[in-house]
Amino acid sequence: MMKKLILGLGLFSLAGALMAAPLPCADLQAQIDAKLQAKGVKSYSLEVVAKGSGGDKQVVGSCEAGSKEIVYKRN
Image (cartoon, rainbow, N blue to C red; front, side, top):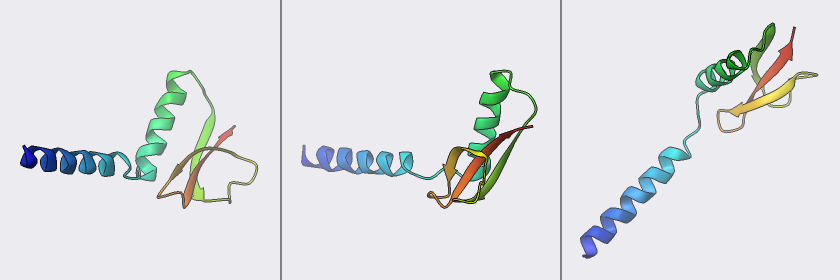
């Protein structure tokens, strides 16, 4: 019984760590791009920039543990 409890807690901890793992910027940018294309949005740009340096562009995602942002600009 105790072994099952310890095993269950270990697996639960591992699952939590994997879910909290930061998504690479390229993967997140690809996901956002796919969503925009699915909605029929045309003529836009997505760019990975350092946090806070997006200027007038709209921030649509955060990656690399919050150190970078993905910004959107309609062309």
